[in-house]
Length: 170
Image 1: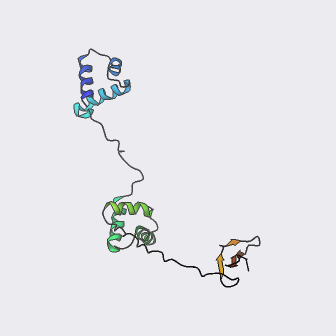
Image 2: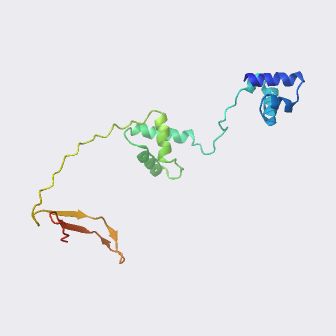
Image 3: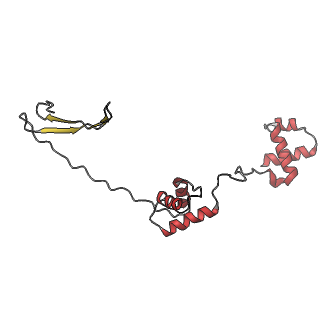
């Protein structure tokens, strides 16, 4: 800010051209033009950095829709944004409702979202295999997943193996 005020002071003295000021302050010539026009329009206060926020947002959801979402959340405190938005869509399908993730962000900003607690972790219980010293004493069964065959039917393969000899029985 001090640099801008000094630049404007030197410009108003008439001793320097815009190109000389641009070189002296190590800025571009259009930047010098911008600072001079800002000073002319609004004085020294106008030299501060302006907000980069857009003046309008064409995709912004209206306050009326936001109020309806908040009212629905207040009526159903335990519901999440997916269920809330689905219910609102069923009530009034003519409105272009925002996505559940957008509604969830708004509700979170308003402090209306209750965070879930951490999942309880259960310890793994060790499973000990039976001892397999002899063939056919213990069999192992393994489901291999499913796939569609060329004739369009689903196949659900299952293998049965002898645990001692590792022989595939079926």
